[in-house]
Image 1 (tube, rainbow, N blue to C red):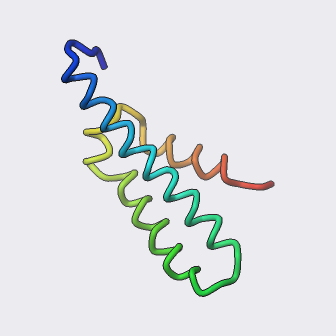
Image 2: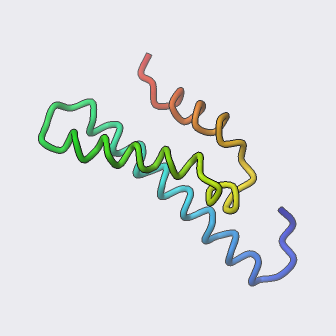
Length: 81
């Protein structure tokens, strides 16, 4: 995306921050799901919510990333194998 004004740059920064926060939330919830606890159900719900965001039209508005590839790489990067 070509940035043409300071305002455009601010919007790009906001969009990037939204996507990065979703990634952080997803990773944190996946880690919680690995540990048996009372938080597992909530963590699972958060992970599913983040994944729905990653495949949503809103995600496509915020970023030019290819969501199937993005989600696959995110999951591969999380794998401990």
